[in-house]
Amino acid sequence: MLTTKQSPHPHAGFSLIEGLIAILVFSFGALGLIEMQARAVQFSMDAQDRANAAFVINKLISQISLQDTTTGNPDPSSDFLLGKTACSAGVSTIHPAAVWASDACAMFDGASITIARPDGVTTGFLTVTLEWSGRYKQAHAGGAVRDSRSLSVTSRFQWQGPTS
Figure: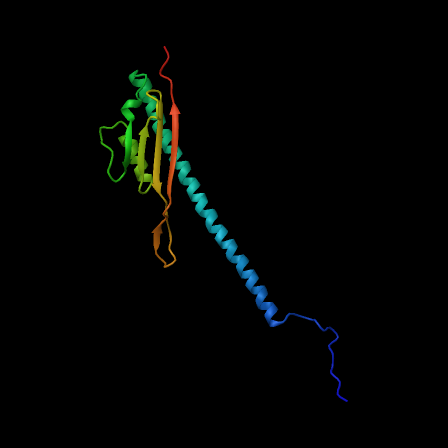
């Protein structure tokens, strides 16, 4: 009579298919972590760009405030008004914010600038908007393409003229 030999541990170890499934699950987890890291870097760069844009806008606000105190004009904002202007079109060199605009355009690719009053307001308020195109990113084909998103920072501010 033939007898089969049984192992003392019938389930001792992984089979090949179990090992492959474990590697597959680990690979999906690793790919997910890589994607999360890439998104975190992108969000960090966007946050840095927004912080730089806010800093640049605050420089313009300081310039307008300085103009307010040096000229004695209680509302110099009318001199700074500027419809939506693309950096590629350029800002007139006689505009009081021309130097600021050229600095802002140098910092942000495909930028446009708007300096306007909020609706229904005639004095004491300005809204400054800086819009720009997203950064370049790696394409699937190996080249670099511009991110299709448009980013912007808007700052609305009010000031009071000099008190005597």
